Image (cartoon, rainbow, N blue to C red; front, top):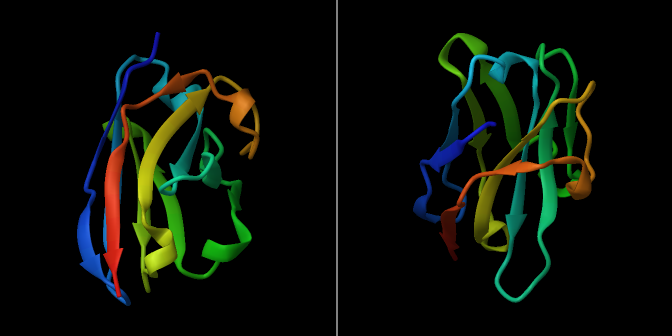
Length: 124
């Protein structure tokens, strides 16, 4: 069983930055692929970024490439999402997810452990 708790959301102006954190429980955290998804207002949840258990493989949504960076610190059981040059269209509830799988999958159904989400609001 893995429990995930996100933090770091908030309100920021367009062009600003935020860093989201996701703290995981369990001794096997380092063996799990981790991902961030988001649900914009009135829309379906979508993939944002993923990172393999070792950190040597990452995947990104095209619209966030070059602006967002996913990383992890297995010693702290934590995964991060650094978000720079934020845009109003990045406004969403951001969710952390994990699964015991190789690589950095982009498919939502792959992940079976989810956090409760943290709100990110970007004002224009």
